[in-house]
Every structure is written in C-alpha cells, then in structure tokens.
Image 1 (cartoon, rainbow, N blue to C red):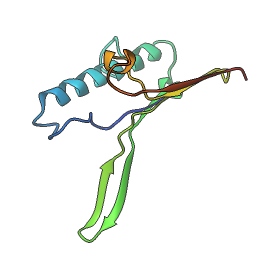
Image 2: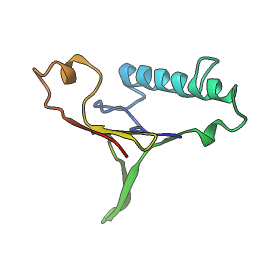
Image 3: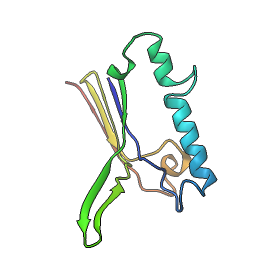
Length: 116
C-alpha cells in the first residue's frame, strides 16, 4: 500500500490562478496521478478494480478560530518517509535535485534503518 501526502499547492508566492509555474506543477501532478492512460491510478486500475486500495493521496490543512472567525491554512509537507515490507525504512528531507543532493546549498538529512 502506498500513501502519498502532498502539499495542496506548491510553495510559491501568489495565487495559483496568477502563477503559471504553480498551474504547470499542478497539471503535471494531476496528470501523473490520475489523468490519462499513463497515470498511476489508470495503470494500477488495469490490474485491479480497486486501485484506491493500493494507492491513495492526501493533503493536510489546519484551522483555528481568530477574532475574524474560522481560518484555515494548508500544512506544507517537506519530509519524506518510505517503509518497505516492514524491513527497510528511510526518513528524511532531501529532494531529488541538485540543491539537495550535491551538498553545496541546502542542508538535508535522512536516516535509513534495515532489518525487522
């Protein structure tokens, strides 16, 4: 089973309606997840009638009561966690890009645990 937690919107300034970069990222995410014959859900759906049993996606929000009333905000997810067959675990913050992996810009870390 794969559970994916994504930010509801990419972390760019401005509105999604006004920012072409945000719209492009969202389009590519939706295409990868659910649109068209190459999407993950379509491909899993070719093997099973219940793809949601094996792959699901979530976004997080938080809320609070202020003087003006109810306010809600997205929770930006940066950490990554993968557990494979209860035998291998990796938890960290690195992205798959040069900023994270070359070690010259961002400070990222991860821990890997092997064994049951």
